[in-house]
Amino acid sequence: MSKLVTLVVIILLSTGCASLISSATSRMADNITLAILNQDDPDTVRDGAPAYLLMIDGLIEGDPESTDLLLAGAKLYGSYASAFVEDETRAQRLANKSYAYAKRALCEQAEDLCNSVNGKLDQFEASLATTGKRDIKVLYGFAVAWAGWIQANASDWNAIADITKVKALFQHCIVLDESFDGGGSHIYLGVFESLLPPSLGGQPEISRNHFERALEISQGRNLMISVLMAKHYARLVFDQELHDSLLTEVVSANAEYPGYTLINTLAKPQAEQLLAESEEFF
Image (tube, rainbow, N blue to C red):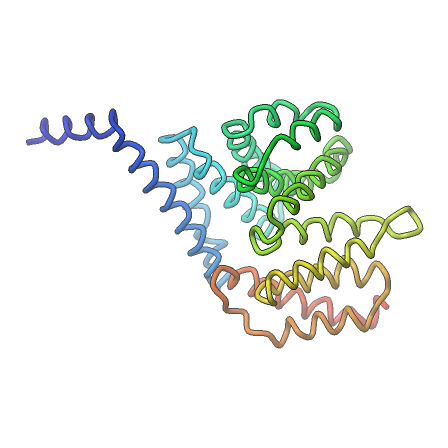
């Protein structure tokens, strides 16, 4: 009987049924990610996520060319590093893993763009222009992982220099489908465009436009958008009224919403902290 089982497994793995197994593992990775995003206890995620990270590593080992698994791994590693890891060295290590997985996915689907990542900006933009809407999942996933890698390596000027390419990625994603991931590209560009004050050449109103569009697309489901807008835009232009209004809405809002519960639960204490600092800051 055991020999028959072994033979069946071999046949399955050597025929089209292998794609069904790959599809099942991809769905498992997606379900794990969704379960984490719907969790309302951040401590549970903080304590339990490392086991999921190891599991996604194992799934990728079994199907190393699956862009879905690679992107799931990149998202889990990047999210965990940015949300829960305070040690700088460890955060960099996890962000590096996220970036590596995302780049492997990019190379699987958009080889020319992958080859231009470390090249000149004009070459990168030319390769980016050849990608289309069918590529948005991998383009956006790589852009997010790259942004997380820059954040984790903010003291490295070589990393900071990559911001222009990451912005180009997000801008292209907006052209392809601005509503992808709840307007995520607008959120990232809202932060990037608020890095410099007007006195140094910054254009904060572009930042505001991106945040407002993200709020429209998300229909208020993602509370972290308001927190980021208050922190990065309202404080930059010293608009206390907008700052306090955005944060007050977050504090009073319901955190539970499918796909956003975890990030909303994390957003509420951040909003409370920023509100508590408002009078002193302004």
